[in-house]
Length: 454
Image (tube, rainbow, N blue to C red):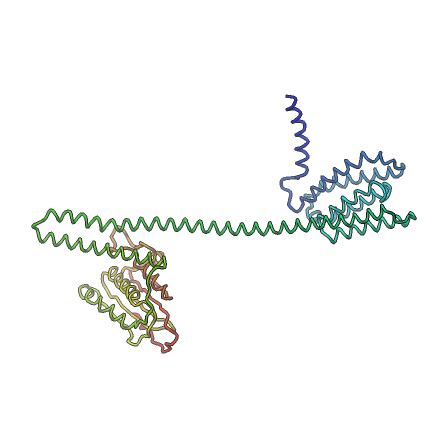
């Protein structure tokens, strides 16, 4: 119990001293040094006050010393009181530095001169100035103290002695060493600040990378979920109709119907696997690309002949307007053909009646290939989303044409690989126009106008 009371009694002054040293919680960083110097002045007052009677000063000097000490107490109390109210006055420390210097010199001169014990306070002032302002101000303050010391010797008709030389030399040494320590501190603070900025930048980069990894992980999860769903649908159909087919060993018509369904679902499954493989290879950079001269006129004519029988068995009209002298481009013939086939196939799937057009021409140094239709169209808010994986916009309740939702993603990536752009212009109920823009080699200069769409 006694030990607890002793610890409690010692803890109270420790807390008070710590609080006075740290200052208020809302104290600005620029005033921290000033606040702690207030604490140091109190310590100085407590050290000097008991020492005055021990100095055996004449009454007039003792009274003057006490007056200076009282002034120092009032001055320090005023600084403590107004330091937060007028931070602009105290932040740079010039005012208190000048006042501290005059107070200490006054105490030294009144208390017996530079040869008295009061001269030690000069070293305290010197260290304070050096640690705050560096070499220039501290050396200037040293010269002021040394000059005043020399003037005192001249007025008192005293010659320079060992004490004067020792005091002068150590004042300069103190100023240099304290200023050097300050320079090291400043360098360390600058290095620490730079390091902190670098760590903040690295943390920011790490946070961005972490967010990207989370996005990639989410994209991977969605991709696998979509692939699993798309694979399950045709596989379920193939398995179900295969099992049902075993129940009709003698019904050839039913067998043919089920075999057609199984074949269609197998083809759908093959397309899905191929599309997934294409997307994966393109995004991983493992796609094999051929770099060859491609004749756009011949390629587009081949695409038109491929789709001609499909249009003959539908109610859609097909218009082809492709110039015969389109300039050659560089790229992968099969992949560019894949893009055009996909756009024509989409146009047929989403157009119940009307016309599908295939246009091509050159504008400037770019080859433009356009596939337009008079189909359902795409709303403005969905036009970016149709290029994302497994996205088919529209009303799911009324049904959509079957597809993997990867076609336009693959088309966009193929066109981008060739240095081109795939653009969409569409209005709901009025159709869509997909434009493939590919660069033409610089050697081609003859302009070929793009036919106007009807």
